[in-house]
Length: 474
Ligand SMILES: Cc1ncc(COP(=O)(O)O)c(C=O)c1O
Image 1 (spheres, rainbow, N blue to C red):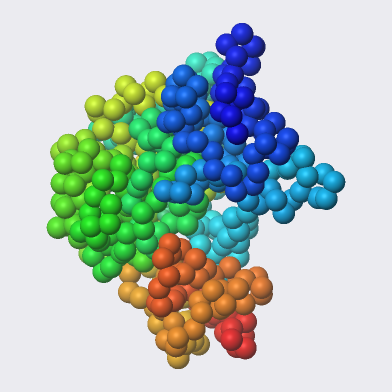
Image 2 (image 1 turned 90 degrees about the vertical axis):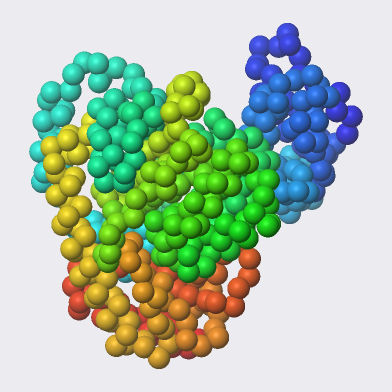
């Protein structure tokens, strides 16, 4: 296709990126661009049409998020081949964007089912205290807090987070480096908009957190799988595979999903690489609060002398995920840039939940809740591990883990973990297959199971029996 047909006009009312987006849609609808056709890179189109790269990137992102474009890593971006199958005979000219195709893991959505991953103990949340704080907050909310919220987050919450991180995670930061976000993906989105470009290459733990992986891929990032072993992310392998990567996403305290900690030599090696290459380290510290043996490890961010670490934490595990609140701590040198970008993004939403979390933290309820949950999770983990050993000992063995709110059970026989997980899910038991969290194939299968909502040993035993029955024919 002649690229000049895409050229937006400066006279029109619509912003340039929107015009470009529409031109592409029209070209696809008219059959000038066919499913599978490669489109020019952001850089070359920007230079061809004399536009800013950010403008082209924005149009491409819209097209990718609506399913018109698919990023194919080094092979570039193409018009989605799925549009072909959606075109009916005689209607081939109006392609509809495909419904988002990624299977939403049952284990990561909806109500608390047995073994559900990612959920804290919802029955143990101190609802009465929460309701009291909510009532008081609603009565006393200062007028400033009823106006438009700061997209960087509610100031008292930013301060409470900075104080908490200083004490519990060894992170010295000012509240101006803290950005409250709509969940972890909100934090990734902010990093993506501030420091990364579509097509940037990043290391991704293999296996690694499946939802963030999908999010990054859809945001146009190219991910280099880097193996994880008993010392966590293999940093030397990362350097061998893609020393020039722009970023890395890592779960150093409690690798997701393997549960190992990144060793100190590897932490130092990673920081050294990032400093030398000017790469960004995105530290996902999603459940460090729950460690049951040994001393809690300080965050990687606490060792960050060169200002390369972007630290993220979430309230999803320590409070509850329906809050949709997480946070990002950026290096002091980047705080201005982030403050600027955040003004153009939706931010973390309503002030009220942020104000309640701030009160919960400042008034000591948070620390008390965490202490209570640590003890509770030791017991609940025991319920599941014992039930698995008694009932399924011959099929599974649980890998020892120092923390977290899920267990990883390895398969004793050479069996497909995907088949087993599918059989369990068909019976309403949302265990997950380790293979689904991998980027590269591996013979080591396993089942991931949440334990936080087994309130008693009997409940765990009953659910494990159901699991055994569900897997019986496989
Ligand atoms: C590895 C990992 N990182 C981050 C998160 C937090 O995500 P969010 O804040 O969107 O709930 C989770 C939640 O399950 C997780 O498992």
